[in-house]
Length: 223
Image 1 (cartoon, rainbow, N blue to C red):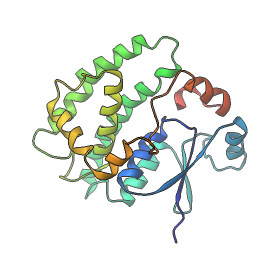
Image 2: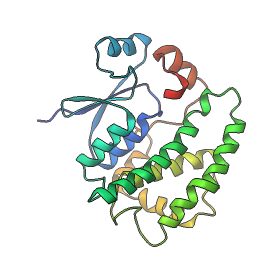
Image 3: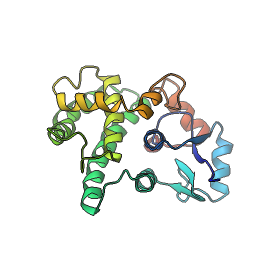
């Protein structure tokens, strides 16, 4: 019997949340080991399992993987969510990395003494730089690349929901993206993930950054 996937991170969204999303869509069950103390993080470092002394870290297929993009690509490849060929994969990766850039701007908000300027920047860039790309790509196609569900689609639905938490009406001028989101949240695995009691993490509260930094020695750029 294959060992269950294990995620090592703190009890919050951060960079692990996209990994939770992707595993959920792939219908892979996973366990989580939260870094609730500084000592737990230091033990991983001292045991030599964190290549660059950073989390997230995922135990899968007998490996201890780090670096968010590498983890996402491995899971996407393993579960047929990374396109049919090299050209599909590079498009999926381009769309995905744009979404990760946007989500990382949102992730950093709890670490800022005054988030208002960053919120304004996020809203502007989402409306002018990012969402128009996905709106155009979804003019006709059901999915972003190759006519089938991929990593990029998973990250897009995650990202749009994050944006709506901050800007509830942000998709009003992007009907294709909003329709896409509506289709995606009807996928049974995603629908379950969005229900109370799932392994999806809530938006970070007031003490999120303080706890992450003090207990885990996580720098602001690591979220």
